[in-house]
Each structure stands twice: as structure tokens, then as C-alpha cells.
Length: 172
Image (cartoon, rainbow, N blue to C red; front, side, top):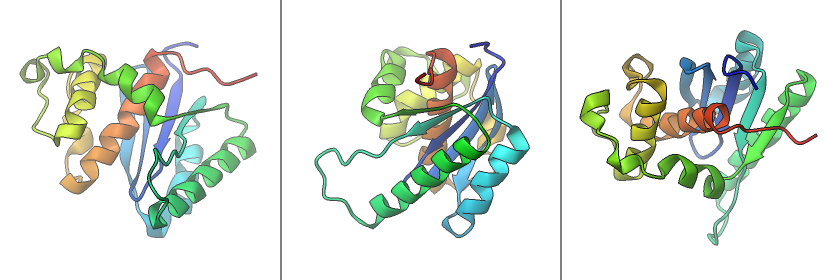
């Protein structure tokens, strides 16, 4: 896959993050408001015309499913349907697969060199890896975003970068 391909990543959850990365450039990233989820997700397909969708599947990791699981699964189904309608190959992966790959060795990355701001502990390794892979912290992407949405946007961006850098491939 050419590094210039546009990858649309979606990380469904109580707050869904989504991002488009094209050849190492962030084209779009944000949190999807529940009230506009269908419109926002559809607009991403129409406006950015992705070449590949990378979707984080839902896994309960031994926890009891709650209301957030229902919404996450609705988002999963809708994104899969959009990928089918727009004929975009889709790769579904899981946090237990892609996050360890992106976190590996990331805490050794000098965040100050890449302009990485202070983020929550659980997002720090992914933020450092993003800054390294993108050639710097994408500050303009986070400008104006509420801090509560940052972990979801970091996850979506990291998922897109994982798809771009580590060769997410659709099944034949």
C-alpha cells in the first residue's frame, strides 16, 4: 500500500474518535458527537474518500457490557455498512492488537523534542508515538478540542497511523 493512501480510522466508544491520515499528514481528527454520529461518519466518507478504513472492534476484556457497548456496536455496524456502500476496504482490529504495537518503546521517545503536551497517563505512550511517526505533535489538530476528547482523538489518530505505518491490510 502506498504511503499516500488516505486512511480513515474509527475508535468507537462512549465517545467515538475518528481521524484521517494521508501519507503522514493529519487531514482530520475529532470526536464524533452522539447526536450527529450518522451524519458525521457519513460526511467523513464523502468528504475524505478514504482508500482504507481501520476500525477498532469492540472487545469486552472481561468486563460486563454496559450502555457504552451498545452505542459502540451501533457505530461499528454503521461504519462497516458505509465501507460496504462506498466500496472502501475495511480492516477491523482490536485494542489488544494495535495498541501494544504502537506503545512499544514509546516511553523512550523524548516528548519535549516533538512538542508533546501533558496528556493523561493512559494516552502518553500513544501521544509520543504519534509525534515520532508524524514528525512532531499535531498541535493544530487539538487546538479548540475539549481536553475530555483528547484521549479519543489520540486513539483514533494512533489507529490511523498504525494502519498507515504498520501495514493494515484488508482480508481478501
